[in-house]
Length: 384
Length: 191
Image 1: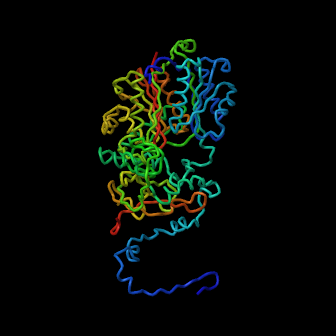
Image 2: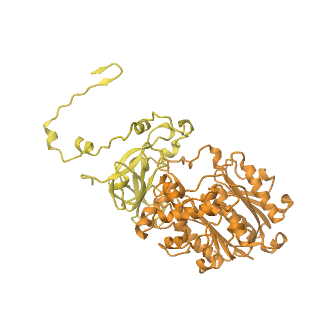
Image 3: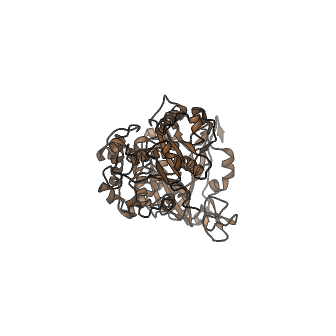
């Protein structure tokens, strides 16, 4: 493969994000319109029907397919819907980026959204499949790394608590977040158990949401904004189901490491810890964020707890992670999440993140991992 | 004899041959490992006598055709051995996850083997009358399976625990009992 096919070829010139939450009074179309029109305004696009060449959208709950997005926006364009577990939003972004890098389109709209709350249940979906596939719970899947990791590296719930406290704090500073509430370690410890060692505060909420980006060819970017952000890398990576993969050590999730190697090669990054200035990583559960620090090379395997308690990943730390509060504070409308992370990273790179702004980041990484987990998506953006 | 709606009594006589049988798990063994139901509330839930938040009517159940296709995995707990690389895997799949050979497998019975717990969690969210459900990833003969444990407690669950396999009700999707294999700590007389 050509690792230079993406880097600096495509620019993000507009971003938008609706308020995430239990949006009982909003349809998917309402949220798509909120996110897309904010992105249009951000890019200075006044006539989307003329200025947008194609649409890439991502959702895993949509019953209506790609038409849902076209119909909401009245964009009668080439439109593609992507579904790739929790990496859906990042994959929709990737498909848009590839279409521009290939020279096919000039300007593309990417929309990630999901509306799980219309199903009328508060918990995660029960998968309707074969006998063996049902009913498992995402907390039960992602917690399978805990007994092994805790035993090998001496970590525990107090380390996970620090991640939950951090993300709840950051969420109070993000206008579009769902949960805006500080919690303490004591609150964390009192939360009811969901799937050991995950209690209530280890788990992301389930919410509705939509987020959008406008991307264009790098040489056209300054026609939209004078501070465009460039795509340095974008990738998705499939991995074996860890529940039946004899080669899994349950100390990390394989697809993250594989996707990181690809993304760093594309972006020309050799020392991620030093070069990346801010990161949004997939904290569907607190332990997922902890493992991701290590799997992305932000610290050595087994050392995450030391860096957590040193404050390295907090807003004022050396590598702030989940500056908007992450899935913990926004909830996880699956198709929207990856695009919401790109929204936050663009604001951070452009110095527009207000109270949660980190000091002068040059490169920003976003990361999703989902399925059993079996799919990872990573996008790296940088200032022009 | 039979009476009314169906009460039956059967008389059995212990014959001399029964005293010559190999050692086995008799009534005493099973009574010794019984567990009391902790509360009337749990009894009601177990018998579906208590209304639940999630109505049965909203449960579309299992796909009958998927159920049919996966009968050897689900009912026989049958794995497969790759003829090229010898790796044993579960469930049945077309391409070897170890050497990538295609359609080169012989069936292997896993139900009478001993597995070992690789990792575990205690799931309080899984729909069951008596949470938490003990969920493991268990290795058996080189294959790796996602497996619930029964007839044990979280306190007794550990990495490396040897387990044997038992055929149990796993859930009631579609409003009917569905069966699959679970693990229980390996006991004496288990192979």
